[in-house]
Image (cartoon, rainbow, N blue to C red; front, side, top):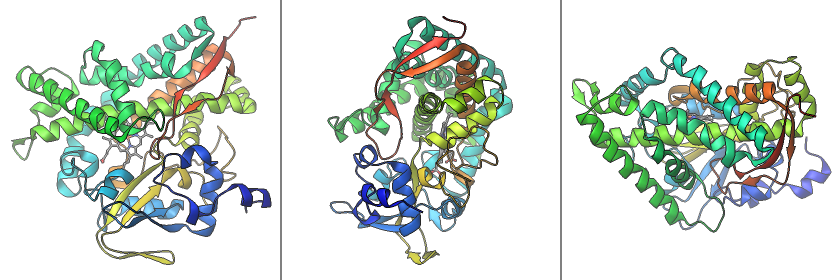
Length: 413
Ligand code: HEM
């Protein structure tokens, strides 16, 4: 139940604008979503100035999981995030895995899984741990640093960059384009910057894919560029859009989880102690960091038929958004959801989604966060925030563009 104090601080669902990134900077998200779950778990938000009249915001865990699972009645092909869903279409539809359904989705997914299954990726795990440890050690030598730009920005991009064999000199600008595509540093960056960044990435991969088609190597781009499905090669658009989705998915969310994990440990000294003492292992802590940070706040679908959900009917053609950032704090599923508990079990969070579009890179994402938890546990004695974290301006990615911090090494006086 909400307390009387929160009733004042937390806005009514009817007054919240989920399309406005500012909302996610102004409110306490845990309190806001609790209000949604209690008062309006299947909530209609009208939108003006958009091709669609509005959308449903679904916030209970059980409903989110049901809709994720149900790709018969709900499609991803008209977009899977609020921005594209409200435009009524996604230009990558049926060219990119996440916005393809049916048999083509299964075929391309199986093809891409060949490069991202735990068995295939096992050899890169040790390298991720090594790189993360080195960066954390370098950070300890600096003492005071920006954890985003000095540490986190350099890890996932280099793993996915190695897997795709992206020249080292190009990686920094890809990180910047990724951030601009998915979110903004502030309200002053324009929507046009987002579109331009997306076009830059697509152009970049179109050139790289053409080279790999001629001279294939052992990397993921070459695998896509030379693969055949039903005896036919993938189209150029399929290759380019899937590279785009790998670089975006592979970099941004893992980075944001690791940063959010560091903040969580700095704010919960008791959990930090349990991790340091070995009372709780890094694997369990990693799952709780994933739940606690939930970097992909929502995904979405279009309904193909009328579907009753609780006391509402989602009509054929309606846009539905599924709020992972609420489902992962649903008190019907998680005991004391507002407590950061690294020993939490069970912990069946939906940070990686659920069902047929369940994150293709979940294994890799977990390895990244796990490597960070492990490096912090073994090398760092104290984490002190030197100022407020700088939040990204987004209604999709929950994350940070800056985090001033002082890290003290184990054994330092
Ligand atoms: C799908 C989250 C890391 C590539 C998804 C979905 C979520 C998600 C929630 C479901 C989308 C939907 O249902 O519409 C995350 C988080 C990550 C992460 C939180 C890290 C902490 C990665 C990595 C890669 C990746 C490392 C690439 C190697 C993809 C792809 C899909 C996807 C290609 C589409 C799968 C499909 O449609 O079948 N991710 N992801 N993700 N993710 Fe991730």
